[in-house]
Length: 328
Image (cartoon, rainbow, N blue to C red; front, side, top):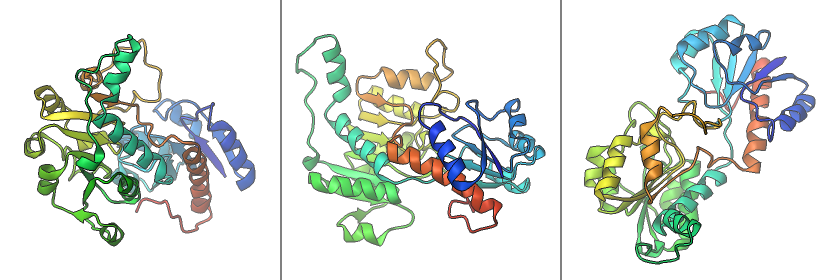
């Protein structure tokens, strides 16, 4: 079986894919380019392809289907960048590559601490040898209520991480988890979340229903000075509403590993380009907003796990075996 891997990173993925090619007895074609209408021809003869977070609209899926591709695995937990309905219509199976929750959960916890302690401003001053203290007074987690939206594996791990800091923890999820309840965390409604939380950390998948769940209305109900952390999906937050909230002082800070309209930007060297993302420029300019480039997942354990699961999923599909990573 032949598998074409797009967006292969030479510096960390190549050796892993070559290792799993031998171990699993498959033929892997490694491509550093993204899947596009032009590069789709590279998949000819491949039953399966692997991508990262490139948008896969119906037109592009049709092209891959014409080359005989029957299975697409994204090397990520989220799969909102793929037109699932079109894939189903074309007879293409979609799968993801889940990894352990600790990497993202640790990163979210770090962003919470960095945001409440104004770490970006501290670093900016230190870089120009300004060692004054005015404006850098932070807050302590023991005095705060932290709300976690989404209590899947990552959200639950964040809540566990926070248990040692003495903060009050609340949560929201459309499916409440008994493990979370037993840990002393109280589930609340979204309106109660907006009203009670000093810090809100997002860990929900992006769907049509929760797109822009944090917008003008939600922000208006939040505490003054609320801090927002997002390591999930950029589309959960209305960027323009977030910017207005920061400019007005309603939002006291933010830690963002994801932003809206990041496709085509992240994981590429765009230093010489004028980016078509005005909101990203503005968010990066604020001294109380930390923006990183969708890399909360990026740990040694994650890279190994994702590469292995991506290829194993392909073999399960080819052999007609049950695939735990298939998107139903």
